[in-house]
Length: 117
Image 1: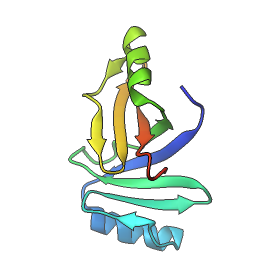
Image 2 (image 1 turned 120 degrees about the vertical axis):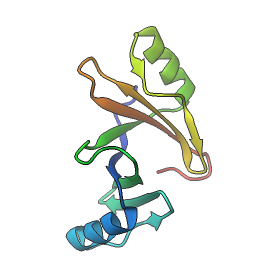
Image 3 (image 1 turned 60 degrees about the vertical axis):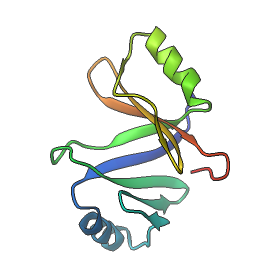
Image 4 (image 1 turned 135 degrees about the vertical axis):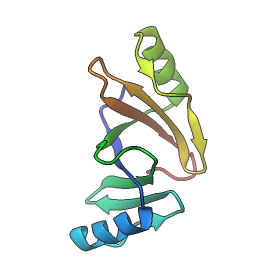
């Protein structure tokens, strides 16, 4: 796995409310805002807000850059890592989540070739 962090994502129940809060706290406008996702650029590091049904206080997920993501998922399976679902394909790229030995959720991210996050 590469050591570069692609982004950190926080699950939020109300994306619009969270977006307004983070805009005030960070004193920044988001790079973009979609129905279920928004991102801020913090001096080259990305902070993402993801609309989610997760219980409050679940916490952040660190996503590592993974190109190609399938190779990293295959390696994690060989290491008996617990994958959290399948690879998700979105307009902005592919995502996959897995658990470390203590149950912490980590993610993999492969951006689309036309746009790198």
